[in-house]
Length: 229
Ligand SMILES: NC(=O)c1ccc[n+]([C@@H]2O[C@H](COP(=O)([O-])OP(=O)(O)OC[C@H]3O[C@@H](n4cnc5c(N)ncnc54)[C@H](OP(=O)(O)O)[C@@H]3O)[C@@H](O)[C@H]2O)c1
Image 1: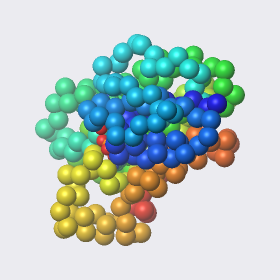
Image 2 (image 1 turned 60 degrees about the vertical axis):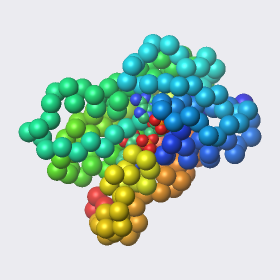
Image 3 (image 1 turned 60 degrees about the horizontal axis):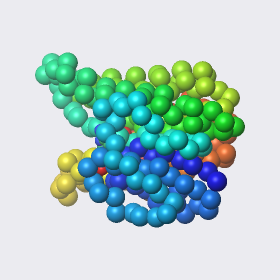
C-alpha cells in the first residue's frame, strides 16, 4: 500500500494530481482543501480542511508516507514600489512557510520509505524574470532554494523536485484568461501556441512521485510551452 499527502487537492493542478493517483491500485491519499467542499469522494481519499498559512504543528496523517505534493500558490502581480512588507509576508506564508511546515511535520512519516518523493510548485517567472512578479518570485525563489538544499540534506531516502509552470488554466489564473482577447494574447505569447493544462502538469507530478524519476532530485522542471526561451 502506498500513501500520499496532497495539500490543495480540491481544485486546479492538485485536483488533477488527485484524479491520476486514485486510478492506482493499493493507494491511500490524505487530501486537503481550503474553501471548496471536495466533490471527488472515494474510499481511497481522506479529506481534511487545512490552511497552510496557519502553520499548524499537527500532523495531517500518521500513516507512513511515500510522497507529498504541495499545491497552494498565488499569482499576485504588483509594481515593486507599491508592495507593502505585509503583502510579501503573506506570499512567504503561503508559498514558502506553508511548504516548510508541512514538510517538517511529516518528515517522520517518510523516514521508513526507501524512496519518498516530494513535489512542490514554483513558477516559470522565477527562471525568466518578469516585471511586477517580485512578490511571487521572492517567495517561489526561496522555495526553490530550500528544495535544492533539502534534496542533499534528505538524500538518499527522500527526493524533492519542483515544477515551474507558465500560465495554466486553473481557478488561480482565471483573472488572466477570462476573456477571449486575454486568452488569445497569452496563447500567442507561448511559442507552442498553448497555455498550460492542469492534466498535463499532473502527469509530470505522477512521474516525479514514481520510481521512474528515481535518478532525479533537487530539480525545477520548467513546463511552459517554450515561454522562457
Ligand atoms: N495556474 C497557473 O497559471 C500557475 C502558474 C505558475 C505556477 N503555478 C503554481 O502551481 C501551483 C498550483 O496552482 P493552481 O493553479 O492549481 O492553484 P489553484 O487553482 O488556486 O488551487 C490551489 C489549491 O490549493 C488550495 N489552497 C489555496 N490556498 C491555500 C491555503 N492557504 N492553505 C491550504 N490550501 C490552500 C486550494 O483550496 P480551495 O480550492 O479549497 O480553496 C486549491 O485546492 C501553485 O503553487 C501555483 O503558484 C500556477
